[in-house]
Image (tube, rainbow, N blue to C red; front, top):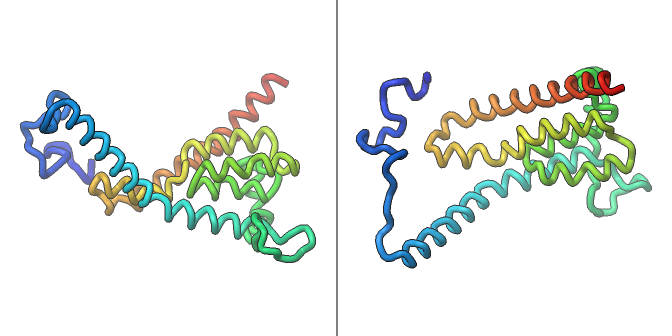
Length: 202
């Protein structure tokens, strides 16, 4: 409301007489030409969107994995996958007095999921089987992961591209802040909803 107001048309460069609910742009040419043009334009837009998203996904996911995982079982670095410096695990351990009551995390390694989902929730889901096999997470963490993953879903790597498409890049920071609050709220709500459910069915 503050940005767009309530009187002016949302799209300033669009004819006010145009109603997107009643009118639509018709492509030139016959049915085959229109189909082919729509197909090519859709593919082009998809590739452009992917290219704008990929850098954020790669950077964020790589950083989180490097900062979460430690060295090999021998205590040395071999250059193998899933090796890192374990900084986030150390930070999670220090913040356990906050993370445990609010989100129900029983292990500091669980912090890796929400942080990875900032870049890609698909990559974050790939961490879950390994955590389960090590006994680092349980039912409460799965509920919280689901809520936060569905809300965040790699938003840091997509918001700039989305706001560019809306021609509103200046609102990117506000959109990111709103999305962050939503994910945290979703995780906290999932934690306590699952607690209530557990008490009821117990």
